[in-house]
Length: 221
Image (cartoon, rainbow, N blue to C red; front, top):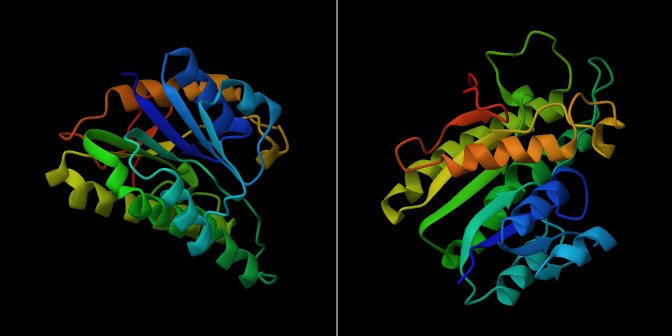
């Protein structure tokens, strides 16, 4: 029986590149998104669309559709990037980023706990910008705060799920050429996905809870 990946934000960018990479490796791919794409439809075993990961109702519907299906790897990838400038802070934007980037991965993970088994893994796509020690440029208040919160959530998940044999990684994908950053990044989604998969391949209960760059470097909190 093939392993199964479930990934949010699977219709484009890093999510689609990860879905394609695991598909090529022979995995069953469950693509979770708000709106599917032709590229995702072509490679996914199952697409569950119209899912807003900030909605309790939508996530409950997701869990119902996946009831009884084993998930060997859950990647919480859906995210939102906005920019806040000191003196003109948009707190609604900050709240939205917190909902999508921090709370939604926990919401989805909790809803799908029954699908995870001993040996399953969770990858949370976070950001180096969530590192407090590494912040030497300021700004991006909502994004930084939401990714720092996700890092804290991921660390707690690693502790709480260790007894169940489930390992958790916090993953920085690099500065990737995606729509989120206006395609101005340094590496392609495919390059990022390859590095992320290598980190996840090396994830164990012994190193669970770590914060890694796609190049394998361990990042400071």
